[in-house]
Image 1 (tube, rainbow, N blue to C red):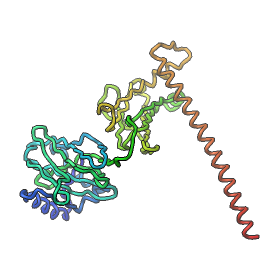
Image 2 (image 1 turned 30 degrees about the vertical axis):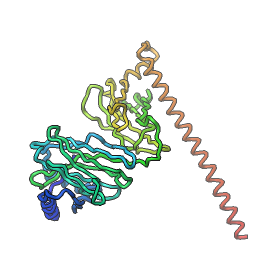
Image 3 (image 1 turned 90 degrees about the vertical axis):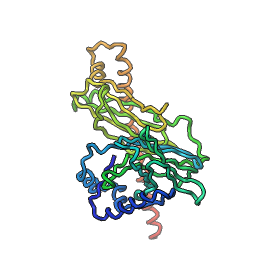
Image 4 (image 1 turned 180 degrees about the horizontal axis):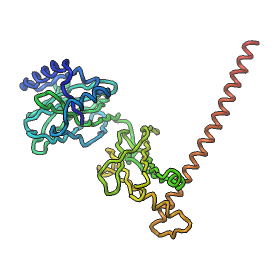
Length: 352
């Protein structure tokens, strides 16, 4: 959730214009409105974010949440993007909708207080419509007859303290797929897990869990880590989302300190194509349990065998990766040698 206070004098005029537009409730058509501060906010300017959070205290302002991180639809379909609000007197609050296309600033679309409002397409048909359900404290943006140009991140927001500031939800990415594009039936993230090696835990007194997610679409994905019975999100790292043919893959890893090696951890994956719409929870066994089970003097129990097999698999994969990397380096050196040799021969022929 983002909060934008009117700390810059130039914003005052824009908000007054917006408020004047809101008062004109007789018109059903809302034209796009660009605010001066939107480009900086959309670009993720660090200075602006500092200003945002230093000008207001967030406690007690309410919040907005967009449950879907992404929604995929084909062209000519319709889509509904929802926004859940935790705001006092939601019934009388105006919910605003914005969008951000790639490499562009935020664009104001329309707002809704009580009566649904819409934007027309060719002055005849509805293109977008914003509505509210006061009993459920939700607002919905509906977009009709989707085109590829509709692909963007859509945000809901509301003005706090008579428009002096704005609170934004995290946004929902709309992906518009050409109608002739065929995707696999199951395009949810497919996890493969790797456990830390015994050498790593003994040498560094820490261990790294690795979660590889493959063959998912679209590329919008959220990965975070927690202890098995904990609610706190742990600090972790992740790689870039990489495209492989028509789907994507991503790495995420968690480094566990020595004091947490006896605890079980879980990797939680949020994606629109998860089965039944439920977040995936991938369990990782305690590192110390796996490390102890590999000691020669330890009796192996039946429950320890799967973890031990997984440990051997991850260790083998590690050395396989090293071998492939070495082969790639040798191959690159050979190709470079022949290319330079060929260039030298061509140069000698030209001089002769």
